[in-house]
Amino acid sequence: MKIFTPTKIMATMAAMVFASSVSAKDVTIGYMGMFNPWKHAINEKLVEKATGYDIKWRRFDSGAKVISAMASGSIDIASAGSSPIAAAVSRGVEIEVVWILENIADAEALVVRNDAGISSPSDLKGKRLAVPFVSTTHFHTLFALEQFGLSEKDVKLINMQPNNIVAAWQRGDIDGAFIWDPALGKIKKDGHVLITSKTLSSWGKPTFDGLVATKSFGEENPEFMAKMIKVASDLDEEYRAQKDTISPETPMAKSIAKITGGDVNTVAEVLSLYDFPSIDAQMSCEWLGCGLEGGAAKSLKSTSEFLKTEKKINDLMPDYSVFINPEYAVAASKL
Image (cartoon, rainbow, N blue to C red; front, side, top):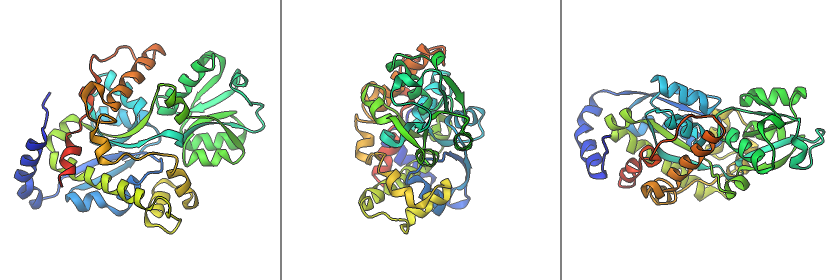
């Protein structure tokens, strides 16, 4: 596998300046509907302005659909959760994590209907639970059931996309759902949280949302990758600086609501449920750095081990660190 060192990336970037100034290149980037500063880049075309590339943005409802699109070659870069990423690389899809969009923490939760008679985990037996399959919430649903002494057979687990979950909830077709915002906020109105991903992560199975790129696209476009990550890093820094004062009138909040279709009045509250790592944290052992000992590599490994136990994948990869590439973040830190 070809690896770009920071020095090689910077040299390649310099060599590509003239070519990139002559004509714009095309790239297709997939995204999902969770709330994060990255949506401001989409709305304001910040990546286009920083790179000069023509970008086609495609929205997906689940990580499984994102990964299928990447495997087919129809998109080059995308946001996806750690569970579908782990499933993908375990099946041989040639992608790599280049940026941690967010540590999910409390932003994903298992919510049950107030009238469903569920006050403790044991009450889930026989209930109808909706979740997008092969997502981070699917992974945490299975893990939660295991911790509760239940199995998939003890509940009626239904594969459902976020918008369909809200509709099914309103019809009374499901008793609970493990999901993210904006769907999460909508079902919380007449439901209560049984457990969140933050608790499940503390039990040894952390989850994250990351930016992934096909290895071939990254190697062929290192300048773009570094500049794109610089945009993401700057937006996260901007959010952290205004975290305590963000309001419905804040441009970033408006962008997030517009791109996701969520309620702008809930943006500040929802963002506070996530953790958006700084670029220094990204490059450290906490996330992208340190090879096998890095947090992202460990997360993919433990997630894959669990997915294999649950027969969601057939085999494990010997080294999950080869699917983590911190070099573009290192290059971005020098811009």
